[in-house]
Amino acid sequence: MEPEEEPGGAAVREVYEEAGVKGKLGRLLGIFENQDRKHRTYVYVLTVTEILEDWEDSVNIGRKREWFKVEDAIKVLQCHKPVHAEYLEKLKLGCSPTNGNTTVPSLPDNNTLFVTAAQTSGLPSSIR
Image (cartoon, rainbow, N blue to C red; front, side, top):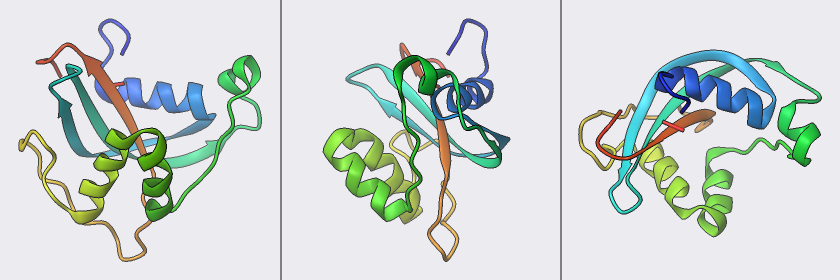
């Protein structure tokens, strides 16, 4: 997060910069804390309204964008970012996030979930 930036605003900005996607921020799905790394991650629904052909990270660092079903995303994340895979597993199962402060809704029947997340460093605080 940038100084004085709200978690939802950071999530919208990050998904635009990193994935070239614009959208409308939806509900907060969960807040996850990693005590070891002193991070708090907020996970939101984002309704996509625009997908850019070229965006900041695609031009500057050659970043690619790819869409996954939840099950497939979990498999990929387990290899590269296991903590993020845990977030999706917990959201998919409809369980409470690790901090126990937020109730997480069940996913729709089609198990399709697109999320954007924001993370902050230095617990406690309130996303990247």
